[in-house]
Image (cartoon, rainbow, N blue to C red):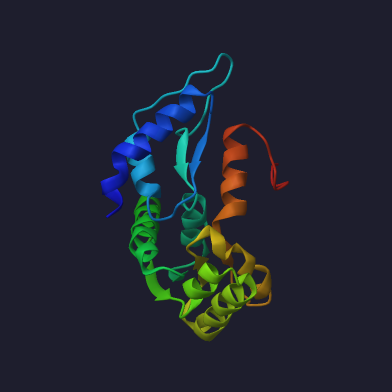
Length: 187
């Protein structure tokens, strides 16, 4: 499982901090929790800089927070079954932090990973979008569990509920940690 790579993840986190990284984003949804756990004790001090949140975060944490705020019925779509459990656990953790109850539906998108492995990104994003459309009535928000699914977001702009993918939200979170407003949402 994901914990089997904890030592290797910690080695990489230390190397990145040693190279001067102030913020590290683990972009693998499956091992993101491991990255946060093993790096949780690290503190980076830079003269004149204070970070409001830990310096290591998983790419899907900002997305999970947004999903919990979007409503109690959350539909998680994944191309790989191995991503479902870590994503479910993360959403439940975020819901518990907010004192909110959620109902999480989890679906492995048929044939999606096969399309991705073949390099057919159009078929990949279409498969994800088709599954989201077919299950739309079950959810207040759709979570695209893998960063590679972000291309499906634009295909679902008319779905009528939030469709969340991790890349844009993770970049905004990292920028926020650095005091930047990349989404134009500051007051």
